[in-house]
Image (cartoon, rainbow, N blue to C red; front, side, top):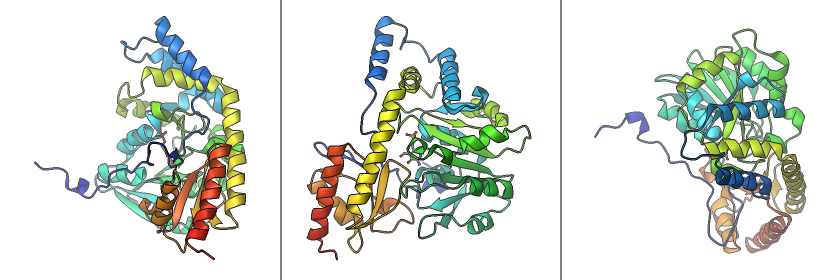
Length: 367
Ligand SMILES: Cc1ncc(COP(=O)(O)O)c(C=O)c1O
C-alpha cells in the first residue's frame, strides 16, 4: 500500500517516560496534581446529570470556557480558540497554513511536535540553531525566511532550554515577515514573569488591520494540572477564528475537559500554590545543582542541566537507578548529547534529585 513519501522518515513523538515506582520528572507536569476542587466539581457534575456524557460536548459550555479564558487573560472572547491541548491547536493551525512545498522556521533545540506536523502537512522545516545561551539571532531567523515561509514556531519559555523570547524581538520578527504566521507557544507562561507573555501585545495592539500575524498558544496541561484531559487554547487575530472553526475537528475537546478547565480557572488558589511551589523549587534546584553542573536559567517548570563530560543517556540511567525519571534531551534536534531536563517537583522530590545528582557527580568523577 502506498503511503505519502514525505511520511516515510517521520519520527514517532517520544514522550517523557513513566516508570512504575520511580518519581516522574520527565514531562513537566504539575507537582501538586489536579486541584481537589476541580475533581469534586467533575464528579458532582456527572452524578447530578448536569455533565451528561451520553451527549456531544455542548457549544454553550465551550462559550462559557472562552468567556472564562478571556477574563483570565483580559482579552476579547472572540479571539479565543480551543483544542485538544496545544498539540491539538497546533494541528489545526498547521493544517490551515501549511501545504506541499511550503516552509516553516524552527529555532532548535525546541519542542519536537512542530517539526512532525510540518512534515505531515507536506512542508519543509528550516532549522535555525540557537546561540550558546539559547537566545535566537533575529538576523539569522529573518534571513532564513523566504516567500514560501508560512509559519515560525517560537516556544517561550522554550522547551527544553527554559529561556523566553523578548516581546520586542517577536514584534520585530512579525513586522519583518508580515505574510508569515508567528506562533508563540506559551505552554509554560504561568511560571515566567507575567510581563513576558505576548498576550499583552495582542491586547494592546488589537488587530483591526487584517495583517495581524501573531498567535499565542496556552494550555491547561501545566500550571492547571490537567495534562491527562488534553485541553489547550490560543489567542488569535480575529480574522483567523472563522477559518479555525471550519478546519478544526468538531468536538475535538471533550465535555469533561471543558468543565474541568472552567473549574480550574476558578480555583485561583491551586494556581497560586502551583506557581509558588515551582518558582521556589526551581531556585532550589538551580542553587544546589550549580556547584556541580552547568544549570541554565529557567522561566519554566523545569531546569536544563549540562552533565558534560558525561553523556546524558548515562546520567539518565544513573538517575533511574536512584528511582528518578528525567528527560534525556539527546532526542531533541540540535541539543547534543550532554543535556538532561528535570521537571521541578515537590520539595521532597527536588531534595532527592539534588542528592542523586551529587552522587552521580562523584560516581562519574567529574571535576
Ligand atoms: C513547548 C510545549 N508546547 C506544547 C506542549 C504540549 O502541550 P499540551 O499538553 O497542551 O498539548 C508541550 C508539552 O510538553 C511543550 O513543552
